[in-house]
Length: 442
Ligand code: URA
Image (tube, rainbow, N blue to C red; front, side):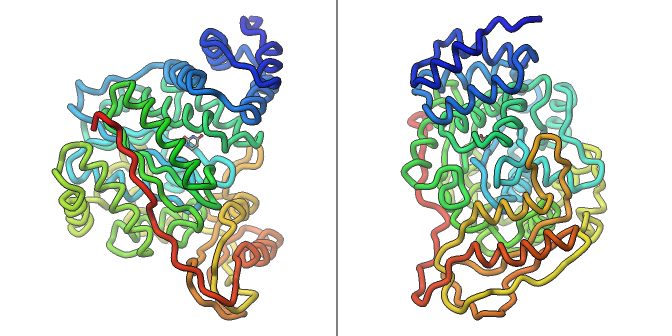
């Protein structure tokens, strides 16, 4: 069937800095989702949007068209109030794996639609697929049944839910069109609106490993998403969080799963836990489970301390076909063939990191995708145990590289230290959060 949307006209108008009408945006999303527009034209339009931007009206139109490209869930027959979270993307960001089970274990049902790795940033679904057999593909009845049964469900975009985002997300990943405010806002909020959450905590990252390089840009994106959500009748809070260095130590799918399991067991890097505790606390607060952030964080601590969080993750893994033994015994998770130390090349203080480059190191080793059809190698990645503000010595072991072949191993052993800025004078440690942006109706 020929496409109804004349893509050449839309591409040319956006290329020249013009606006797209509501009907044109609806037509593009409808026809692309139906398979009537080829990827090369969709990619050209994405690049034109990337370069020229979209105004607020176009962004809202794009979000709503994407949200309605499939079914939209009403989950109130299985849970009275559903809470969700979403990260704008970062390196080493395994927050969802820690936070979702803790929040569900603390009594707030979580129904989440997640994404895959995008550009240099990892994706929750790719991480979860480190569990053998685990699948994010659920039918709507399955999604609802699992939410009712265990209070936690984690799905990918399906043919039913926000399918336009699934297709566009994969295309953006390989066409250098990720870090654009309108495209990110529409991608995140379309999934959130379609999946039927009543309350959403947005973790908007800023810094050298985030799609929004400055706090101001992250705040703009956050405000836009909060407004889109509130207009659609959802309660939304956005946290602006630091991504000038990886979160925790692990970067790479199975390594991140291990680190998340450590955090749920009461260990793991301090920054990861502090970050997860705050995100989970805000989710419980929005869900009305506590009347202050402090009280909500105490609920999070309790769910971790008595093992309910870990047990909930095991339930999630098993419910979606995964091997629960890997939760209890992380040595059963996929491993890379080679594990070698990473050494510092210079002495001094770590003052900055090219965090996106650190993410790309993992992608180039097979931990992410360079083309849509790439298959992820779950065991590859690295541990980087130094943080901005630390003093290091040349030759000091600063981490551990996990690779499947000798060439990527050696390249990564050079690239990772090169992504660190080391200077004579110390830099202050980075804050975890910069701001909280609330919707007016919260
Ligand atoms: N996360 C998403 O779901 N979409 C984006 O575009 C970026 C991060």
